[in-house]
Length: 260
Image 1 (spheres, rainbow, N blue to C red):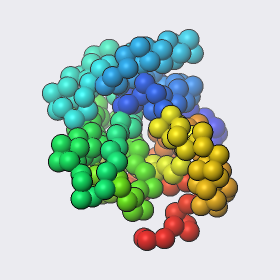
Image 2: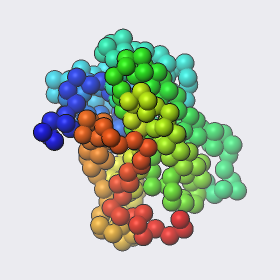
Image 3: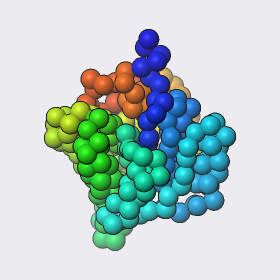
Image 4: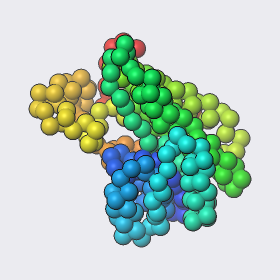
């Protein structure tokens, strides 16, 4: 019975930033559990089409859609396309995100705006456009925001990124309360160190990798599949009573982190 509750047959999902990394793995896991999926991307159309082909090979309905999540008109058009092509939208996964490294005293205003626009404004716009459709459908829905341990854990050198994720935490909590009457749940997923291309420099340097693993109580770096499994659970009927919470998937990192 519990296993059936975690399946997603008949559901339609939008995953932003899904042409690679964690987003790609999330889209694949949702499809594996039965969902049809729209693969959003901003660049890397060829990779997005590869994901679509993989999902279609699994017997799922999938298509790719290029959109800048920080552009309200593009977001509205994307959500409209999901409903027009797939008939509805049940799950919105706000995964698209970027980071820029710079000491606080040297942060360029344009980089600040870019990171906040993509990471926080993008999540707001996609959640709003999706929720409006979900409300009109009258059957509830799921909004899942992919945050980071740095919504709570300071991240020197990455101030715009940490601030964007801190904002996402409160976005998750506020939307959970405002949308509860419509049976739309909102949850956050906050990964720690995950083996993705963005962390390649650390993963390929034995000394840096070992240093990072020493900070993690479980002694290892997580996998995209572990993050995707949590997202798929939160998207399912098994998580129907979960809303407003952020789930850390970090090997215990936050339990011994300093500076909180």
